[in-house]
Image (cartoon, rainbow, N blue to C red; front, side, top):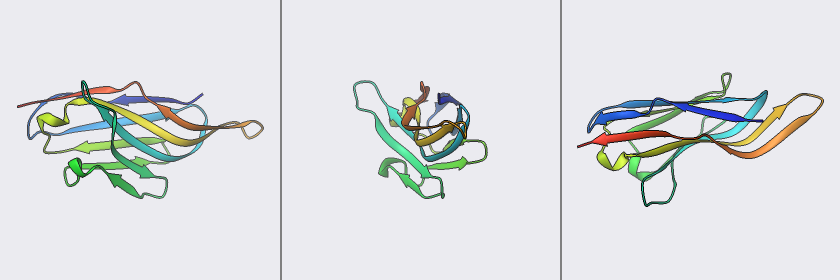
Length: 125
C-alpha cells in the first residue's frame, strides 16, 4: 500500500517562504506524476503544481513565479518551495501521487492515485 507523508507547513508572515516535502513509501518502483493541491475553507481543492517523472512541470497561474516544484525520483519525494507568500495562499496543502507502480516483482501493483493527509499553511497579513 502506498503512503504519502507531508511535512513543512506552518505559520508565516506575508512575503515569507516555506518549503513543503512529501515522501511516498510502500515498496515503490515508480511514480508517474507527483503534485501538490490545496484547499482553503469553503473552496474546492485545486491544483497548485505537478511534476512528471521526466521533470515536466505544471503550475497554477496564481503561483507561477513564486512557487517551485521539484522531485527526487530515487527517494520518491516531491518538494514545493513557496516564496513571496500571500494571505490567499492559506490552505491545507495535499500531496498527490499518480500512476504508482509498487509491490514486488512477483506481484506488482498499480495505484491510479494516492493522497496524503495534508499540511496546514497559514500566511498572516
